[in-house]
Image (cartoon, rainbow over all chains, first blue to last red; front, side, top):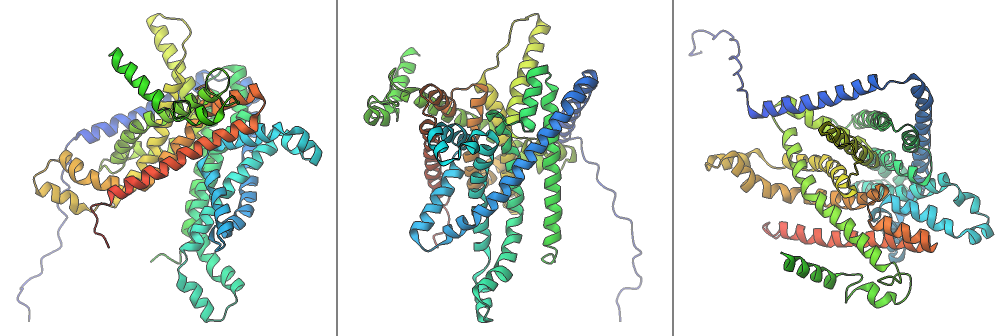
Amino acid sequence: MSVTERMIPPQAPPPEEARPYSAERLAGRIFLGVWLAAAIGVAIGAVQGWDTQKFFTYGPTLLSGLGVTLTLVSLSIVFGAILSVPLAFGRMSRNPVISWASYVYVYFFRGTPIIAQLFLVYYGLGSFRPELDAVGLWWFFREAWYCALLAFTLNTAAYQAEILRGAIESVPRGQREGAASLGLPARVTFFKVILPQALIVALRPYGNEIILMIKGSAIVAIVTVFDLMGETRRAFSRTFDYQMYLWAAILYLMIVEILRNLWAWLDARLTRHLKR
Amino acid sequence: MDAITAALEQLTTALDLFCGPAGVFTWFAGQSLLACGDAGWGDEIAGGFKITLFLALATLPFGLAFGFFVALAKRSREPSLRRSANIYTTLFRGLPELLTLFIVYYGLQILVQQALSAVGYDGPVEINAFAAGMVALGVVFAAYASEVLESAFNAIPQGQYEAGYALGLSKGRTMRLIVLPQLLRVALPGLGNLWMELLKNTALVSVIGLPDILRQTGVAARVTKRAFEFFGLACVLFILLALATSVVFSLLEKRARRAEVVR
């Protein structure tokens, strides 16, 4: 038996309180206005400074520079990934000499600017021409492109080794023990139990590393590789048109944003079994 | 005033780790390529080291303060403020640092030139490389710092703010006395990584002509034709900065943890 005699009919929600026009809102409007003005300024500049001939002269060169950037980055990421495997296992090794040596390698390449590493390879190793000639490697160190590839590979190997090590160590011990109690051999345990879980953890940092490499690869322009930055600098030095840098900025932003969104999608897709 | 600057100068020369009375190059370089003074490159490289360090130290407070306000804007209830802060971070985290540097360097030059020609001055304008580097590195640092600080903000429970208001503290005092000390504690490891990145990014400013470590070793390498040794030295100097950073930050983290319960 109920005490209430009648049901209260459903009611409309209370009206939303009008928010006062705060300083925050004013600041937000101003900053959005600034961004809008900047975008319009760039657009007006592009229309006013439009030069069909310039566009068809330098547009394709910028795109070919973008191709060079992407080739360089993808090759060095792949080679770096191969090199990072022994490094990561060296870091986890119980042998103090091996773990210390790989720690020094990783510390060196993560502690110095990549531009200094590039100079060390290109100018530094390039100064040993007689010795390199003697062992028949001079063709490699003569080309700035190969030197950049080598420097980037060595650099990204250090970062990727840390990512891989962190990911493998993040897999709980119980997983390894569980596999051992099921009688799985060490190889199977690693490839079927540990690695799949580790790679999910490593996915996000790998994406960040690729983006960092794309941004970092701009410095090869200084050692005369004509990547996107190099082509932009060449175009700027011929036309003195400031917009060249803005075009390059838009291209870089596009690549980075595409990658970022792709990675967010990949991450959501691969971890969908972990969502609750 | 002159006396103070003279005293400061004397102090910095006395404490100079490279060419001072107790410096490495003074004692061990002898008359080699790294000797101090006119004979070698020791003093030039020591100057470059100082400029790298000063540039990073000068950028840090400006970038940190700016990043803090961007992080606040990202947490604001006002959608327009959030959106403009997000545009800012997307922009400066997506652009290569070198490109940002060029855009700031040449862009500032064009802006200043136009502003001056509006006033009636048509001479050549030269932007200070140090200032351009500071602005470019500062905006990039602020973009990354805002991300670190934003996630640190998320680690602070709402109850901390409420406790502050319940004690009758104003919004600003709650932020300064209650939230900020905890925020720095949480954000310290992330900020340490950003400081390392900042130190490494200062090497880029050598491209627009600032005589930092990399520029000076590069000049020395070109003149002496001993590129491997000099660029190797540049790497060693950066490693020294990295080691000093990890020592300082482990001390800071220890200090930040001193109030926590010992387990």
